[in-house]
View 1 (tube, helix red, strand yellow):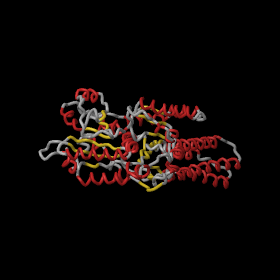
View 2: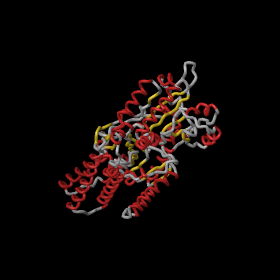
View 3: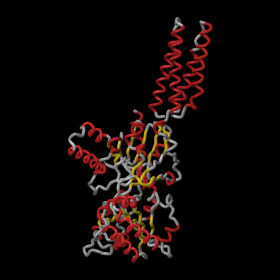
Length: 505
């Protein structure tokens, strides 16, 4: 039961209190009118009982409602026999006061988080932490199932990742939290695509047009952050942004990109309502993203090094190799197709030849296999063969865990495709190198300029591997061209406070 529903019940109780005052002050009233007023009060209290029953909360208020109804029924039965009797106004007022006090005391905001993939929970985690620490909130994490799609866009496999979330996060089953019955005050989502995603889709019951019916505030927080260097924002044109009440975006630059995409869409579709466009633009708020908050925890005390990783990262003498986080994504593989698989093989060969100096920590996008299966099925077998060879050769570390911040804790540099991962990594003030599919991984350009590299890294710029090749990375790190940065972000708390201010209006 959300705040609005509680207020509606409290308003109905106020009406019952007014009826009680009316009956107490009426000195002369026909038995027929008296019976009618009391019957109406009993009907209203039955409606309250039914509403509470719908939300599964009747047991909590049953005693107070029963006491109120008994007083009215007993009085009505007694007066019909005696013809005249003192109306028990004070006792009825006391029972209604108890009911009001109990409803008001339990009047907390119901805040529900609906993540779908555990690996994307970081985009909501710090908001949940703020909500769960807020005494005015009851916060629930309700992971929702999703389907992957085949190459024809048809639903294939059903997935549920509730068991993959961090142990400290209490999970409520989606089957135990009926949204239509609970009607939470606030719903947070990080998947806005409904049925428009080519790779996955959440259950239709959790599409944003449905969710909007069950809450006063539907809040969308993207499961990714965007690089400013990537100036394409077509992904902002989705149903979740249309249906949400508020959309949180990482900063003003990206917000302008989102708004620009919607303005362009409206220009290309002249029949799109101007008022609707203005509403969409107004709901966008640049207030950060919780994914940045998670960087605050990237230290060994929060992420102890697993023993299997330690064997690959440290030499027998205890010295540390250069650890390279290798990021491979859906978009870049789609764009370069077979050329990208050849690049993967070239990268693996480089690290195989130099494994005494480097450790490759490969983390593919969590939906990469599903994307290949649905969009590039001809590449799937070759890709899976590369994965098998990488694992069997013990070339490096293959990380498909839900939490990539463990890898960030020990990686010295980022290499691979530019994505959310690169934007986050550079905030740690470590090198970010963009792989080029056609660039030989082993190659060092004759014009390599270490001073220019230092200058770019000081500004947290991403460098193409032609500017900072992997072969020069150890020398770059040894030259002290970067210093690890400790972050202190609190975007989740900021977002929680913003939303609570909206909810309390």
